[in-house]
Amino acid sequence: MPMLPLLLLIACGSNTHIVQSWRDPNVTIVDGSYNKVLVICLIKDEGTRRVGEDRMAMFMNGRGVESYRYLGPDVDAINDASTGERMRKDGIDGVVIMRLVDRTKEQTYVPGASYPAYYASPYGYYGYAYPMYATPGYVRTDVNYFVETNLYSTKKEGLIWTSTTSTLNPTDLGNSVEEVMQVVYDKMIAEGFIVKSGQ
Image 1 (cartoon, rainbow, N blue to C red):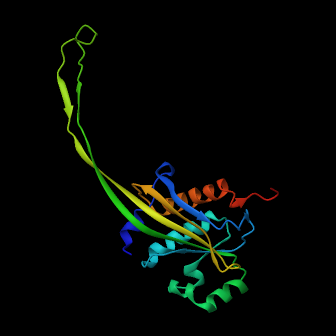
Image 2: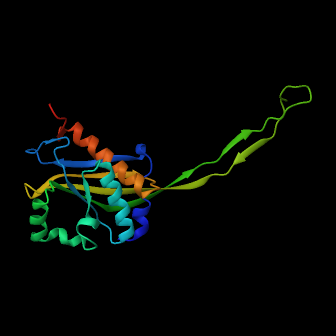
Image 3: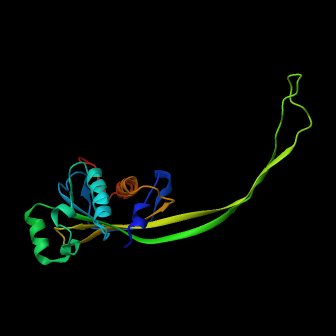
């Protein structure tokens, strides 16, 4: 995957929303019960991967473990049986994998506008005669990035949550990753997939 698309990922919160999601109906997580979660940003460029994983881990308030620290540069090692056993021994409860799945562009013509340019008269009021000014129209290109976020349970050895988010006109990778994480977390809470302790 090229570096630029992920570098452009995600801008402000209002531009990111859930497109679709699925949860294992037999699984409910108590908030905070996953003490260690391996986070993986699936992208080939190592520097970009580290930025993404650092922000994913930061969102988890100390519970996230970056895969570039845990697995090294070979992220494919996550598929090895020995890695699964190692994660269980190290107390890793889950794995979150984030990846860019699609990018779409849409062009919209924004028409220009004409407006009066008033000018002040020597008598302290605005005259009735004024010229007309116009702003030219232009073509606006909107870009949507679709990010898939999967959560796996090491105990169940399987997928327990998946969702796809859409982000319009992203500008910054770090902010984007946090925005996706927040939107996904809010959706998990809303669906009762994650419940607060004591509920």
